[in-house]
Image (tube, rainbow, N blue to C red):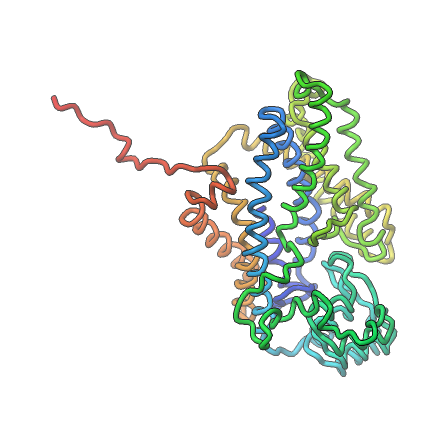
Length: 495
């Protein structure tokens, strides 16, 4: 969860479909590599642990208590987040994008020139050999997606006339096409132009764009009717943003609940002590390759790690991918290894081998095979990505079982706070990125400043506004303030 703050903070420092692009943004630094390194294992570890603790709750408390717990601790926060954090994030993101100062992009920055509306500059770069269907990472947007986002019809016309594919699908944006982008942001002329070039089906006779549900949902004036952006609009929530993981968790718990119900019905007395065959658990590792091969439309638009699915209907292959980690964690609970010790204590024991090999060998090789066209081979890249995800996941479990063999107060506090920090962090990160966007500091310094300051602000908000309130109880259960040292001193005897 904490790595998510750094992951989203990094998006301002290299070309990406993001609300804020820092003045230092470019591909010179290691920010894109940092993002892929984190994205490749962060959520797999989360879902592996979620499966483990889901099985723990079932076996200790029963299916009813498990479902009740997940409704209170996952479904309810998600619902509240949809009505608060999600529209706030959209509002803040629109503000940050509108407040960006007009700056002159670098000579070879075709993305910057598209966003700046520099048609002649983009035309020059295309003449110099830039790919008219160039894609940005992460997200898989083409420069035509970016032109549709700005609604610049001259730019859209230039790119289409140069042979740009009118309906390319973004890899990590719910299959979003340029027409879908223009539709979402309410750019009528750009949408008409994309339809004319074959970017989608023409409108039925007598129907206007504005009459179609969802038109202009992402525009600054959506829901206001007066072209202003004075408030939050709750009526056009179409994405979970960073809260998608809670939605996925509910789907996986629902599937687990069905299996647990069947097991309980077949053996009411001994179900919670029954174990599945060991091979079922271990089969989850090679099985992960199946959904991984489907990422990026089967490698057509390569992406390192799983696709993002933040819509209301999860992408099946992404849900299946995380289900393998969830199932492994659930099947690992209370399972002994060959030595007799619990598998959770031994499965990552060679962390000293898993972590360096995964990070120093598998990750670089995976990035080369994923993005280097000269060496591109999607099956090989997919295998390397799966090996990286599992190697990092198991290695980190092994490392932390050694570093933290028992509960520590500070670690427990950080663990509790991480849920709140991740749920609330995205609008705060975007605000911080917008504030430092034009500061004359190195990108690395600004990245660290954003990560540290945002984390500190959210920790303070957790301590004083969340931990001992109804919000804290909803997220982590009831917490009671520890009495002050002076309150614990025994009273002196009267004698």
